[in-house]
Length: 280
Image 1 (cartoon, rainbow, N blue to C red):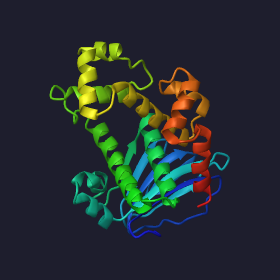
Image 2: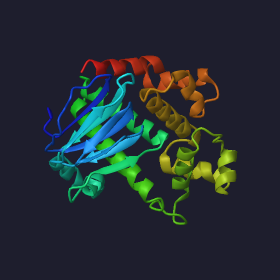
Image 3: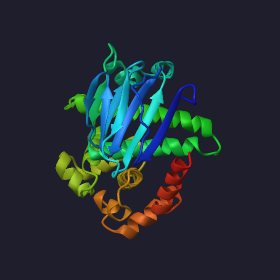
Image 4: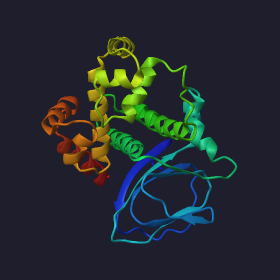
C-alpha cells in the first residue's frame, strides 16, 4: 500500500496481467462489480457474481484469472491494516466485525442486494473523490469517509445475516419510519401511505420524525432519494432511468433537486468523479 493505513481503488479492465498467487500484510476487501473471472483463494476457486464482497485476511494466497476479455472487468479493492481497524475499534468493536470473521485462516464471502451494492459503490467513489481533492479539511474528511465506508459495509453484512438484530416491538417509531423508507424508496411515501402501513396517525408520524431528526419528513425523503440516486449513478446506472427507479416521478424535479443538493448536474457529477478515478 502507498498509504500507511488504507488504500481504495476502482478498476475497469479488459486485460489484466498474469499474476501468481500472492499474499498481503493487510486485509483486502474486494467488491466485484462486473466481468467474467475466476477467483482463486487459499487453493479454492469460484466465479463471483455482481454485488459480491470477498474479505481476504493477511497472508492468504489469492489471485484472479480473467476468463472473458470482451467484458469489462470492474471492481473496487479496499486494503486496510489491522492496526488501523484496531484504532477504529477503540471507538467501537463493530468496525472489526468482518475482519474478525476471517480469523482462523478463513476468508469471507457475502452477496449484497442491488441497492446495498449501489450504496457501497457510491461511498467508495465519494472516498476516492476526496482522496484526489485538495479541498479545505481534506484529511479530516478522508478519515470520516473511510470510517463511514468501513462501518457501512460491516453494518449491511451484519443486518443481512442477523435479520432480527434491529428488534421488533421495541423499535421506536422513528426507526420504523426510517427502515420503511429505505425499503420502499421507489414507492409512494406520502404521510397518508406511511400512516396506513405503520398504523400510526400521520400527524404523530410527522411530529415524531421532525422532533427526532430535526428536519421535516418530506425533506428527509428527498435527501434520501437523492443520495441513493447518486449512488446508483456512480455505480453505472443510466441517469435517465435512475430518477424513476428511486421515486421521482418527474425527471425535471429530480434534476433541479440534484443540482440544488450537489451543486452540479447528475451527468457532470458522474463525469468528474470518473475522470478522477481514471487519471489515478
